[in-house]
Length: 140
Ligand code: GDP
Image 1: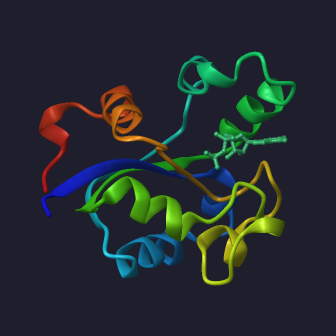
Image 2: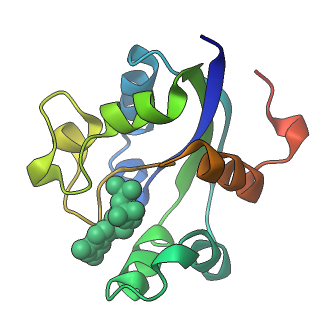
């Protein structure tokens, strides 16, 4: 099966606790390869645009405040069935519901500060990659 790509964010709760390497190791151990990566401070406008689908949710404002509360690491991950492989190793949104051995079970602080984002479909992955990366930044 051909390799596909997905988009990942290591969120501010994880960068604050110096867990960039630990989270990346779990992604790599799950068979995913980091083909692009950069540490950025998201602007409010970027965070609002990225989470536009959640604009009507009651937690939208808090979520945006959280995502700009510190640096994040945006990454493009490649591997077999990358979207599913990443969602599987991330675990459930709420760490209380996440399976043992997942990133969120291991590291997340709360349903909001849950350490990682991962695209939920190949279509969203393509759009999210374009949101943060130019083609020449995907170096393989
Ligand atoms: P994901 O695909 O597992 O990240 O989950 P969603 O797309 O449903 O939610 C996006 C992000 O919003 C989550 O990763 C959390 O950071 C945050 N979030 C989701 N549900 C809640 C909630 O009930 N309260 C708060 N404060 N944040 C939430």
